[in-house]
Amino acid sequence: MADTTLELLRELTEAPGISGYEQEVREIIRRHLQDITTIEQDRLGSIVCRKNGEAEKPRIMLAGHMDEIGFIVKLVTDEGFIKFSPLGGWWGHVMLAQRVVIKTRQGDVMGLIGSKPPHILSEEERKKLQEPKDMYIDVGATSSVETKGLGICPGDPIVPICPFTVLGTGKTYLAKAFDDRVGCALFIEVINNLAKEKHPNTVYGVGTVQEEVGLRGARTSSWVVEPDVGLTMEVGVAGDVPDVKKDDAQGKLGKGPVIVIRDGSMLPNLRLRDLFIDTAEKLKIPFQFDILERGGTDSGAIHLHRRGVPNLVIAVPTRHIHSHAGIIYRDDFDHAVKLVTAVIKKLDADTVASLTE
Image (cartoon, rainbow, N blue to C red; front, side, top):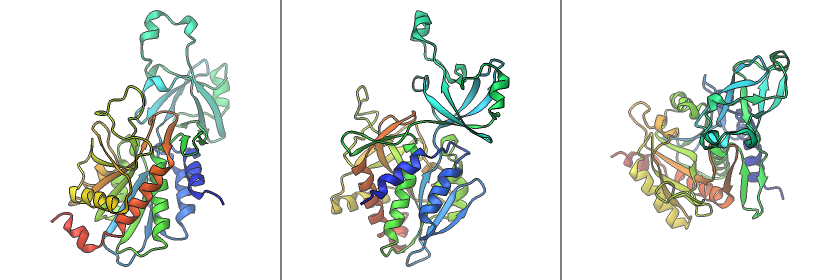
């Protein structure tokens, strides 16, 4: 029997979709939910999938951002190399010698972020972190004429390459763009669950755009949904790797979804937090806590909509985020789906009203 969840994660992560160029991801979401939801789109490109329940209100917004970190073409040098502009938070150490694909009007062009061989590096250069502004992409051309002949134009999106791979344990998956195709997969799976069960509210699965460059789609899509509660589906920073202190990242693979008790853009509603804790404990779903002090999530925009929206971030711990590849643990994802589904079934009008009394 096919593992539909694995195939969903594969399909979502392998799709190209940097900030501002999320259309292929949007169409995947549309295809998976069009038979059980009513779908509309805001003018920035966020997709809003409404699953009706037993009541029109409260409205529960499940947000997962479609965009991944990437780059856009800045210019082509006389020698035919491509200078680029990063979209999202990149660290120079994880970029050199990585393969990328440039999405042009004429088709895909493969390239490599150039790396100076160690044989010709000075001692000073070996100690220095190379900045993205000093990097370039090599597409194998010998002149600007050849490069432009491939159809490459300023503004073209540049996407990291990393095929989805099931690692040796069978429980761990490696792929690009888990941040935040995991969130998109989460709300798709939750809505599929709710299609078979009653729920006392209306649920909106929202694939937001341009989160990595400023939570932009979360702002515009909130006006479409007008949510009473916001739940952001995200990845968390897994701290179970060498040289990461517990104070910096508490999440561990295989220990359950993460309830984020603070991020750099939002403080959660504590009664909503307690509802997740109580539900997880009753259903014996493992969970963890973490704080993301220097990063923001879509909740940062959603919770400020109109008079304010009670919000919480639920995350799947992920190793090596904001690089060309990350690693998740399947059980953490499945437990997140189970927990969010169970909480939504409790969010009737009285419960939602009590969150802000």
